[in-house]
Length: 377
Image 1: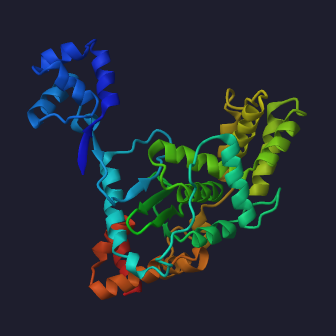
Image 2: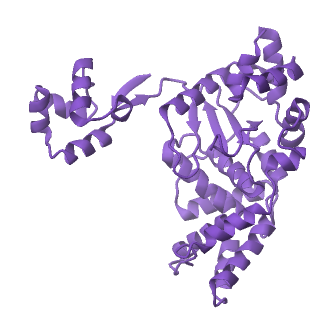
Image 3: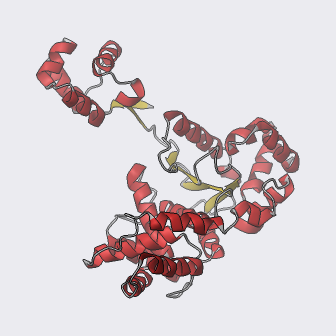
C-alpha cells in the first residue's frame, strides 16, 4: 500500500484553525513550498513531519492519510446501514477476504479468455440510468409492467460470471446486506449476499450488486450511488414511476397515497420506500413537484410496518434461522446457481486447508466454519 495525504480533511482542519499555508509552514518549521507540495500531494512528509502535522491538526493517522491501492488489490464495495461507520479495520478485513478468494480463481468453471461486457462511461444521469435499466430488463426478458423475479436476477448474475456467496450474517451483529469484491487481475466478481435480510430489501441489494458488476470502474461513494440508482430504475422503471405519480395526484390524503404505493410494492416485491424514491426521481426529472411523504415520516412508518409482514430470506429458504450445514451449502447451487462451495471444497482438499480458512473467507464463527468444513471435506 502506498500512502497519500487526505488533502480534503487536512484543508478542513487548517481552515478551522484559521491558518494559511504560510502560517502552517511556520508552525511546522518548513518552507511554504514544502507545505504547498504536501497539499497538492506532490510530496509526502517525512515520518517526523507527518507526526508533527497530525499533532498540530489533532488528526489521527487514519484521518490524515489515505491508503493508495496497490496494483491488483481487491476492490471492495459495500454500504453500512444507517449511521454505522465504515472502519479501516473492516475494509482491511474485506480485502483480506479478497486475497483469499484469489486462491479459488483457478477452480472457477468460467471462460477465462474473455470478460463479460461492462459499461463504458457509467454516470448518474437519469436518462443514462434509465437506458441501462431498460436494456437489462429486455436482456432478461421482462416486459413493461412485469416484476423482475429473483430467478431473473440470479440468471443474469451467472451470465455475467459473478460468483454469489450466500452468507448468514444476522441482521443485528453485522450491518451489511451485501459485500462486493472485484479482483482486477482475474477480472472476477464475488458477491456476498446476507440471507438474514427481508425479502424486499434482499431483491434491492441483488439489483444493487448488478449495478456494481456493470460498473466495476466506479469505486467509493460514486460506485454506491450508481448501484443504488441502477437498482431503483431496474426494479421500478420510468414508465411505472410516471404512471404511479399521476395516480397519486388523484388522492386527497397521505394514507391513500401510501396504500397505492404499498400495492405497487407488493406487486413488484420491493420496498415501498424504493417505489416512493423512484416516483420522486421521475418527478424531479420531469420538472414536476415531488410527493412529500417524508415530512410526516409516513413513508418510513409504512415501510417498517410493511416489512414486518414478511420473513427473512433465510427463513423462507430453510424454514429456520439455523439451517443444517448441508442445507445451507446446497442452497448456494440450487437457489443461486453458484459454484462457490464446489470450488471451495476442491481447493480445501487439494491444499489441505483447515476450517480457519473457511472462517476467514466467509467471516463466520469458527464453530460454524468447522461444520461447513465437515460437509465439504
